[in-house]
Amino acid sequence: MRKKILGLLCIGLAWQALPAGAAGIEGVSVSGFLTVGATYADKQLVGGTAPTEAVSQDGTIENTPGFTADSRLGLQISAKVNEDISITGQLLAKAREENSNVEADWAFINYRLSEQFTTRAGKIKFPTFLISDYYEVGYAYPWIRPPQEVYSSNPITTINGVDLLARFRFGDMSLLVQPYYGVSRGAQALVPQEAVTNTNYSLCFNGQTPGSFYTCPPGTILYTDFTADALRGINVSLSSDIFTIRAGTLKTKVNVPGFGVFQDDVKFSSAGASMDWHNVVLYTEYFEREINGRANSAFPNQKGSYTTLGYRIGKWLPHFTTARIKDNENPVGGMFDGTPLDQKSKTLGLRYEVGSGAALKFEVQEVTPKEGTRGLLIDEPINAPKDPGDDVMIYGISLDVVF
Amino acid sequence: MKTLKQVRATLFLLVLWAVSVPAHAALAIIVHPSNGLSGITADEAADIYLAKAGVFANGKRAIPVDQAANSPARKKFYGAVIKKDDSALKVYWSKLMFTGKANPPRELVDDAAVKSWVAGNPDAIGYVDGKFVDSSVKVLLIIP
Image (cartoon, rainbow over all chains, first blue to last red; front, side):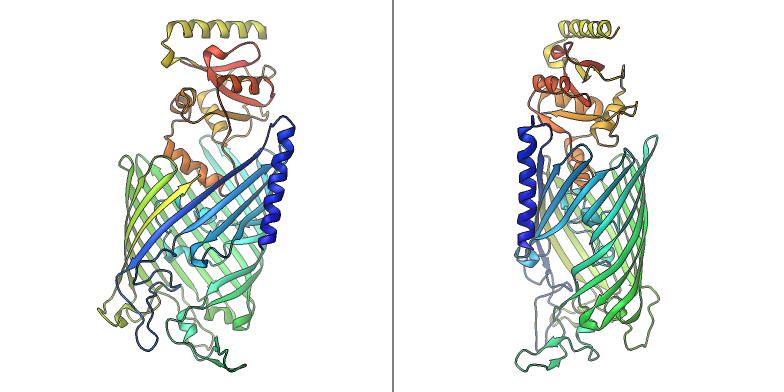
């Protein structure tokens, strides 16, 4: 991977060198974004024989001040090859992976066919939701992290493939129709706690005794590799200076070797709208996910939604979000039927513009899983060894910069 | 005909420049002399500068060029034509740049650099302080 990235950078630099000699008409632009964030959750959820500070299901938000949940760095190079062709590469390093795993989040060739049509080929992020293609660019949205009840539901964010951007203008409005097709390789998904502790799956490998597996203790954080084939979808978005309305759907077939999953059907549908009008800021989205076969054990059928309302006062944007994820008529009782996650959350946030190109954000979030379930947490708050209750408070502060 | 128009525009600008205080100098939106258009609206110019349109009203390719951030010409242009504040603009471009959809216009150091770049590029559009206008470029709009 690193070599690939170096190669990409070299190509970028080589292109920079070329037109510089040719009167410097078009060059290379380098830009980037950085988020530094800190989080704290008010209680420890997993006690017993294997206590852990982890609170969020991926363990990055803990009952101790932490810096890995939101911190990340992105670096982008784009170069014009000629008037109609350009290349873009975006490298992403996340603190949650100890910045040791630099990935090319985007790496594509852009070909402008006409004023209305552009096609892109390579590694691209596709728009499952309103902001999924700029999810990593914290500066571009109000929250510290977009509502997880919706945004955590699709672990596939990039494809190797092609898309088409067809743009049509009607007065002040513009319509974007974006079909895409590709495959996803090397993606990882979090193994839900229900599957970690389920004796049907022997997920933890005992390195001491080759060939022996055992059920992991609650609180074990495991990721599984998976691939998605024939991923095809379409995104339709109508926007003006004031609002954006979008809807989209995608289908794919997933393979999860760790779970014996092979070519299981996945279907995703979502719709949403955003508005920024007279200092009133609104975001609202809804999704449904349906996953068949054995894959359902790790990715059950879910639906979810959120609404954010904010009001801009000069450099300040206070906002409030309610969000919910719940069961989407998931089958029950079968050996490979997963456990749908169910939680509500309320978030009070504040964004402050620090000059232009930087934003400071504060958030207080109350996460309430459905009674008897853990929601998107690592365990039920009611099981907290100290101070058991129905909910967990998560505090966050972040600085988002673009350059 | 064209030359006459240009002379008229230039004279008009000179008059404007003469009667206005330097801090409120008129701004001229300029293109290459071969550009077939005789004028442009502020909204059309804004669409080109925000990458909403990649072409002029006549369908010809449009390549915008900006002045340096914090230059008086840029402040005036963005205040009068684009009508977005700095933060809103940064958010707007972040969404387009980091999704590989568009990049902001290329930035040049000053009025003279913009004028000579526009004079050398048939697809170009730029803006300069009125006093920099001469026959090497064509004025499409004057922002008093």
